[in-house]
Length: 333
Image (cartoon, rainbow, N blue to C red):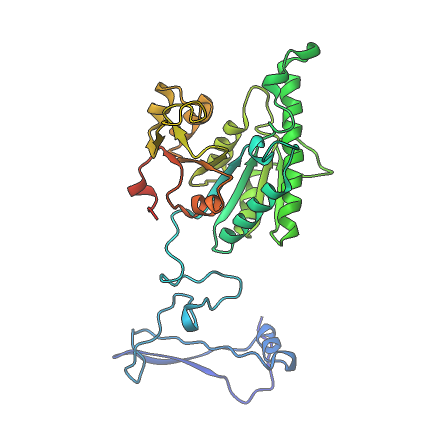
């Protein structure tokens, strides 16, 4: 509802074209009055309304691309979209899968703080570009259910639940590292642990990502007999992420074990069918099938190489690409 103000006249907003010229009078509401109060007197608002591409003096208006002087963004906190400084991004929302073994680093301890800090810094660099990052962590550095099943009467389901709790430990550690350098982070678990993390809610996770927060998914799928690779493919499909980035301790997918065969050849790209037919130990078959059915590409790369995380997230050529070709999906560097 408009509130009358002690003004002698209204401020006109004019629109003009070659054949139409009219003036509209906009009444000032309480919200407008507050805008022009003493405490906001230092602010300036410029409103330009035009029905043509050129102004009255014949000059061409500036393009409305959000860029200010020197190609910098006119909006605080938003990245610059100047093509010279920031090339077009291939993916806007990605899911990064970090294995538990990778978090162990040199395996002298369960979690290497240097590894988590490296991950945090590279993720921070890409989130500033406007890329939304979700992370799924494994737990093999602490407890692997499939390995311990059968020991001392431990059944597979119970062993897998223990492994899920190990992923929560990794997620909380990684969250603390990220927030120590100023990255807003949320941990969501597949089963309720309300005292330490949020329960997984798809819409809430997407909203966190839209607000620029990093979301760490823990506890796998919440079900035994499923790996965290399957959880990564599932969460990627659920939150509409565009790619699964699998960070491991190797440079990608080889035609042979590079530790035993120094002449093993690195595959630059593979199809889903090649992974399944050759029984390549990239991800479990459930995860690969889920990615194939939802047309989700997978990039396998080495976590220990500095800069690889940022390159993979930005869509640069690194490691092995499954389910696509480098020319059509990512740009070589």
